[in-house]
Amino acid sequence: MTTAVATATPRRLLPHLSRKAAGNAWHKRTLYLFLLPFAALTAIFGLWPIGQSIYLSFTESYTALSPQPVFVGLENFREILSNPDFLDSLWRTLLFTFVSVVLNVLVALVLAVMLSQPILERGRTLFKLAIFLPVITPDVAGFIVWKWMFNQDFGVVNAVLHGLGLPAFPGVTEPVSAFATLTIVELWHHVGLYTLIFLTNLQLLDRDLDEAARIDGATRWQRFRYVTLPQLRPAIIINSVYALIEFLKTFTVIVVITRGGPNFSTNFVSYFAYTKFGNAQYGEAMAMATVLFAAVAVLAAALVWAMSRGDYR
Image (tube, rainbow, N blue to C red):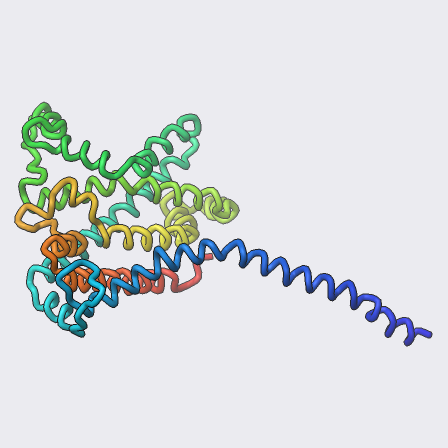
């Protein structure tokens, strides 16, 4: 009798299990159907242009996007890699990216820690809005205002420096100051996003660990260094990778403020490729874009691998 009941029960459950499995399968198919339009848009407007650009970097033509480009193999890459102007442009791009990534991540971390302090409880929303506002400001409009501010004749920056009895800032008239100008403007434009990411992660920290360290006699710096900072590693990785990608392809701020000058000191790879397009050198321009794409992919992967090693929990 017991054996009959034991064998009959699973049989009664079979229809229920079958309906549940069918429901799960339909649920998964529904999710894929919802994702299909976004996957199609990504493939059409993301992956296809990238693939087309890489293909065109191995060709040469006298008209943009020629229907019958001439295949030249690695000739375009040999041409740009033997060009000292391109190598200088690549070096300046990497230097600018390194400085900007370090500066943005550090400033964002400091701002996030300051905004998380109880003393700023009342004005925190206003401060967050002020920091994040440049992120949603239209690029060209914001950069034009900065160009006016750094103007040598009527710029507010030199007016303030003159009022304080300090020497004038050369702005975009000298190579080093032009490089610094782009760094400052890009810091203003992007640091708000990285700050909010850090702020969000600061709210998710394990407060018990900090309290235990405080009871054990750890100083504020020691608690931040050995308790808070390790828990922020995911946010540091996200911000660093995003900043790396963003600054390697810096373009709009150069077009608006410096035009690659003075003396090509801000002629980064993205702008250099743009000028090649203007000179109808489409194959070399695509080769430069491909080199930049490869640099972004390799450096981003290396950064994620290096910063993800070890256990931050």
